[in-house]
Image (cartoon, rainbow over all chains, first blue to last red; front, side, top):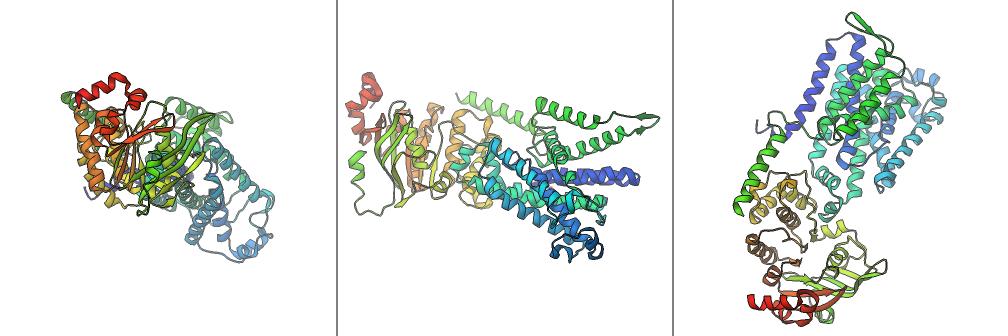
Length: 355
Length: 260
């Protein structure tokens, strides 16, 4: 058990991913899609968390990297024959090459990282509100490029289809676990710890030598890689993609997932993604009529998004640090709050005695 | 301070922290005015003066948290005036803050480790330095507590340990002893001496605890309204009547004499 101690906080997220996978495997093919979506959401939200959670800076632009990953993995896995027909305007080096499933995911992650690095160079000098607005601008730029630039995507925002559907439960779970391991390794690393310190107190971080811009850029790039991977998983789940699928709605939804779970921890990102994703899936089904045993629940159109909005708002007001309080869950350890209060008592006792 | 300090450099090794003709104005208020200051390795300098004298501003300007409106900062012969604070820290210039500024959610031990990690130490080395400093600073019992749970005086000790974990060449401490119990002060004075002797570092200490300043300082600089008012050994300063007017008040001087 002591050998496991350093990686203990990783166990809870990984076990939750495995649990979702197991439950999903027991359900019908149609229902299983909800669980695959939950696992892909975990990867997207972990990507978001790697930057936002560790730096404390908000970003509305992370879904851009999901979009880049999705289009890259999608276009590169369509066989070259049909690709010439459906994507006539494509750059020749994209049109004339096709790769397998795994290489496409690796390329998606690589391009996501590269795009984040290029965008992050100017952006990471900003903070607060201007950083938020600038990352939003990145989302806007990416959306328009993918909609109106036929050299990299289908003409005028049409659907990119014919993508092999390789993301089943297994691939979605494997991707989510890879994302969790990467995020955990980073937050435990020297660089991750320095960035998290700057999140708590910028001046103190500067005083111990932390180059905050550089550390943020590194996290942003890593976050781009995880998000790109998530995009690859997403396009291989659906088998097609449009720019609007990786735009505002997904941005709102994934931010809600992270906030509901708790921005400060990997455990929060995982819990939030699983819960909100499943809730979202079932609420959307309920808009078309959802059978619950003998009853049939039918929600009016728009109710799903409305309920999620209310949930997010309530969370921000009532529990701003999320369901997990922004803490990791360490299996096999007493709750942190108990340690805190017990030690605080003993400490106060000592203080009095000395006086 | 002033001319006596500036003329001492001569042909020496240049291993000094030096502020030359430093000025800093805030919207018409002159916080520092043509100030010269020097700190050698292996030296403890006490910086005293009334509130608003410019003590914290001087620390901010030297460490890069504030830009001087005129003048230059030199670290062991290198002009660092244009360097950001983090780079100066990595070059061996550590500081603490009046407000403590510990990373409240992290444990005491993690706080101290970060001081080493920030300047490039590996995790293993950081752990070793933290263990050593926590024991020196008598914080080992609290190592696993979140730093925010400690009393304010103890938090400042954590901040000092964090600054020392970087193995600085110079460390500038802004009221590190505020909030400490009287009984802890002598132990803290011992820590400062061992920083000078053991780590071979230069120490600048700003504090309102005159007993501490008198006990640890090799030299004392007195600031008033952004200018150097006096400079000398603790004994000289104690006798200096200008200081009495500016800082201690007549009764304060009497009290110091009686105690001495």
